[in-house]
Length: 137
Image 1 (cartoon, rainbow, N blue to C red):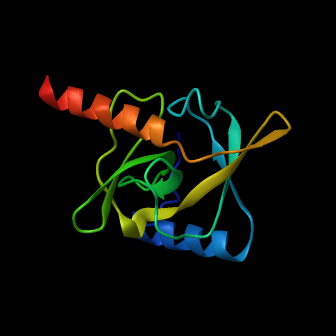
Image 2 (cartoon, one colour):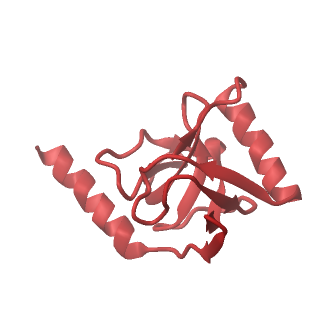
């Protein structure tokens, strides 16, 4: 789920969004379908203050184009980089540097209904397995 970029560098945009998440509630639009079935299109997600990602959590980050994206953490790489992937996506995102991470999405609001998002190790394992199968093809 990606939102249009701000025009700032990806690092600057991520820094501003992290600061906002620390100081106030940061609700971000979740417009795409890459997180189906976990998150429906046209939802909003509440991003909490930054800390270390954990495998299976849903995180907001700024991609290399400067777009806000929300996907699930599936692996940590060397050099403090992370692999993320949408639950409904065919492809894993390019590795994301920790400086581009904003924070975990804990709450989703859709059509006036709010629900908690939980860490899903099973979903992360499924996505990681799909990535490995893709590498073998």
